Image (cartoon, rainbow, N blue to C red; front, side, top):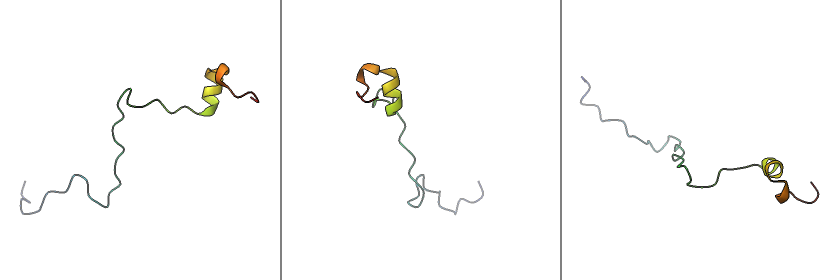
Length: 49
């Protein structure tokens, strides 16, 4: 490293978009669309379906 006089780049620069936090298995229920819910669980589907 020859450019020791240059300050190290910040890990998260303020102008950079914040990366999404890592998803933990079981952290929150998976997002399921209404179509998937009605298809996978007919008993929970709306009456007008």
